[in-house]
Amino acid sequence: MTLRIRTFEEYEAVYQESVENPEAFWAAQADTFFWRKKWSKVLEWDFRKPDIKWFLGGKMNITENCLDRHLKTRGDQVAILWEPNDPGEAAKTFTYRELHAEVCRMAHVLKKHGIQKGDRICFYMPMIPELAIGLLACARIGAIHSVVFAGFSAHALADRINDATCKMVICADGNYRGNKSIPVKEVVDIALQNTPSIESVLVAQRTGQEVHWQSGRDFWLHEEMKTASESCEAEEMDSEDMLFILYTSGSTGKPKGVVHSCGGYMVYTAYSFKNVFQYDEGDVYWCTADIGWITGHSYIVYGPLLAGATTVMFEGVPTYPDAGRFWEICEKHQVNQFYTAPTAIRALQAQGDRHVTPHDLSKLKVLGTVGEPINTEAWEWYHRLVGKNKLPIVDTWWQTETGGIMISPLAGITWLKPTYATLPLPGIQPCLVNADGVELTENNVEGLLCIKFPWPSILRTTYGDHERCRLTYFSHFEDMYFTGDGARRDENGLYRIIGRVDDVINVSGHRMGTAEVENAINEHPQVVESAVVGFPHKIKGQGIYAFVICTEAPADDEAFRKEVRQVVTEEIGPIAKPDKIQIVSGLPKTRSGKIMRRILRKIADGTADSLGDVSTLLDPAVVEEIRAGVL
Ligand code: 7RM
Image (cartoon, rainbow, N blue to C red):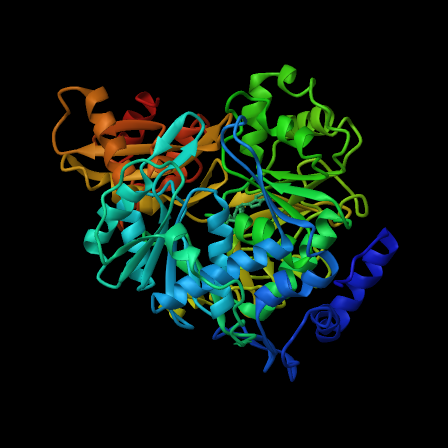
């Protein structure tokens, strides 16, 4: 089994070893898995291309490590514990044996519909077991999954399907989230009007609502599963074969399809899961993320199952039927490790302590957060109310592109410092550089966060556009992966992530490109130009502030704002709706026509008294006008 570090001294020693001899370190990790054929070389890399390969020549299938390997030792242990939206509905469990059988059956269904190794399948699903089973079924036969978060619009879904030329969509009839039900299949139907590569649609039955049916294209998953066999030989995959694509936002308008490969992702997710959460045999672990994001991929599905854990999967939302739901579930399923996002903590904190205190949280051992910087108040509340002043909080910094947790405490083993992600995991070599790319080697500094050496689950490319991958991550600083984040390193070498230094904002832990939102706003016929920035938001971390120039002054500002929000909802989804929309007559631009977002950010967060250097500004009067009209 994967190496697990148990003392601080061991952490320091192992970290040192991992830097001095990374290949030996990672080979020892990889050795704990089942390989059909062992690798012949641990690592080959060139960040300039980039060309990164791990465990070269190794043959394996990640599902044999998630499932088959556990059958003898823990076949009857619960693998997935599914908690429905409605607390009155019974939870469902799948033991490792049952999960194995379901995955095999679904793999046969995929094959029957012509899916072969290398084909792309798009998932647009609520948080139901069929989603996890579906991902594993793809991995079983070597198909590549591309999950699109079910909060995205039909338009956004179609773009992602087309970018990856997916052959199949797997969805549900509808979903339940709180007291809302979303017509999932309807959104898919709209998207598929414009997706020539799609041949078939598998529909999981969840709500039983009526759906439009295109015979010959649409198939009920439960019908197809009935006759499928419970055993299915796993496809032999090369370490470097593609495992999945996951779209994420960047500073340009178009989301990128981040590509992860089989071997390295397997090794890293299992390793990081075990060490960060200090998972013990028999524990119940719960990550509240949606599988539509990387956190769900790595730390609901792959990491925990590789480690033979019991992983909880929750369909609902933190505030339904009330703000005590998370703690009720922790009590009910005797959760030992609980992993959530700062935005959820802030939202629950705002509802008051009385939702937490009645629940028995005595089984909890480890708390975690991910997705955005956590503020001191939220950290302290989480620590005091949920952790009863004694549980470690692992503030885990990582990204879609890193595949797994990079900088984080190891629960109960390494130091904690509120709002600090603290120390890199062994095998991870972060550094801070200044704008010229010069490494800042001393402590007590702030800079741009880069990683100097590859790790097994680093992204391999961006789907269909390798040059974009190079430009985005490997071109800013020579021989380094650039994260897009700024960070501080304190006098003891602990890292605190400050936030994005590019045009990406983080709204409730969801990554969003400002250009993406601007493009959506610009679809409104009355909009000439727009500029979007983030501003501090009490619950969401960052809110979306849009400055908009109109063809002519709207007759009714509020009605216009509503229309703009509607356009954004249609183009991207409700998560991208601007919180504030200010109608302006011009935008602060440089003489070369570039929008000076720095100024807009200062106006939006109310710190515009000191605008810094504005000498390049074309028309200073516009700044005064915008400042006077700030919302
Ligand atoms: C896992 C995930 C990545 C961006 C990243 C950061 C921010 C993530 C933390 C954090 C401060 C953290 N993937 N971020 N974790 N900032 N502290 N613990 O969120 O691709 O969706 O986003 O999220 O800016 O670059 S992601």
